[in-house]
Length: 453
Image 1 (cartoon, rainbow, N blue to C red):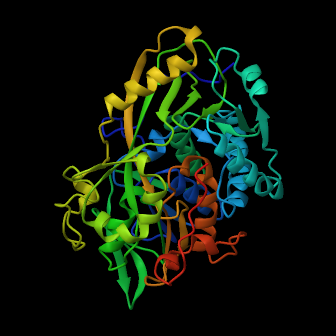
Image 2 (cartoon, rainbow, N blue to C red):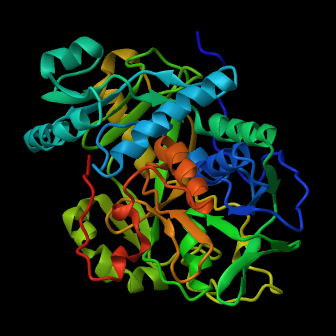
Image 3 (tube, rainbow, N blue to C red):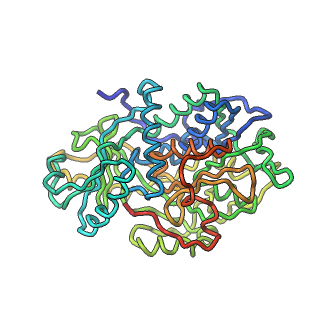
């Protein structure tokens, strides 16, 4: 039986404010951003004994951390990410146990369903990376696929399957992790935006929030879609863009599969309320702004490799990070863009979601009508090579950057948070972070894209 049943959706600006910590004047570590990476960084830092404060401009999990698909997957990751996501899976299990099952974690597996022959070859080529990291992924025949989903119509040629992958409701799990961090001693504040860093003699000396200055020798920037804008105000250029991804939730319906699954067009996941979360598996929207032009060369290989997967829109709405009217420079005494838009809450694409609901109904014709009970969108912070930035910022000593999680931050988030906290404490991160360094976009290194799995 499910530990909890939830029918609501993502956290928004209308969600009741739940975290009202007192902003201190001094701390050992300031964390900017209340998504999964920032929250778990706060948890690990507090457990290590640091006086840690997390400042979130809007709501904990208000943006992509409550708007994602709810997948916690090891399957299909970039080889350099695999050790971190395996670690993250261990943290997910431990945190769920520590919170008495409040995260709603379920081990139900991930299926990548194959409707194109070339995908079987790609998945087979990835399997050695899984085995090297102790992950039991395997290819399934078409017969085995339909044994697992007997209600499905024909068309799939096989699948990539990872039984140890998990799922959770993100809008439940991330706020619960924030409460867990508070119990560990972290101070968590909603509706407190960090306007800029406090820089003294070229080094981080704290952060300037809308309520005043906080003295601290280390700051972690986990600002998601806002990270690049924050860095640009300090003269640091990071080629990070954000794309809009639309998601829908169905009303409760018969179970066709208990876990997470996707083919080349449709992604779906069983929800705790008895419905399904549905989304296009490989389609998003890019709103053109000044940063999109600046980063075009870096993103060109990614765009060329999947032209059909990106819909280009002429301009970002007012107040978005890459809107033409959004300022790129402001002082600590000025109201920042982060205060002007507390929660980035983009409208979804109803047309695309109706199309996705139709695909789901066609794949499972015996379950009856597919009624959508809710729909939303989120802004995915992505990098040209589809892997995160996780590094100390050389241009701003004392700043650790954890951003660009590229649509898979929910699952890997606790691993990212643990590493960010250790970097802030000058500890060995325990993993090779060469792939995730900030300088890879400026030191002449070729941009090697992660797998489109």
